Length: 185
Image (cartoon, rainbow, N blue to C red; front, side, top):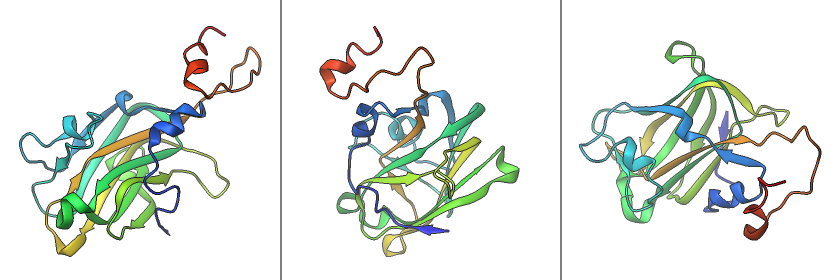
């Protein structure tokens, strides 16, 4: 299954969160990498700083493993890459796999990236637009631009849909001023 990064290229995933329809759940997972240079690991991949990055240190494929303690509904994955800064370290072919463990991962998306700069939005939905339920997500970097050996990824975010309230339906508050008070309702 091949898809491209056509869902708003470069759009900041924080805008997705402000809609109130999704929330970031990366902090609920255990993250591991196939390899990394010292000082360029999971902490840099998750620090919300677009100037820092994970740098692999080994042979391809380079893997990012994201494991949840329980089966989790996942709607989208957002990856920040920057070809202008990273050149041959920038991924050109990425595979996204899901499953219960390392032993039964199945590829659900494969992306071909051409000199990407910005956020790459990867929907993790089936043919009926239903989010994926999984214990584990694996992102595999299969190739880099200019046949580069190691890879850079600057940030990864994982989103789950927000459940509707069982108390009653209220209109969604989308402005920052209203979002401050949405928990009071």
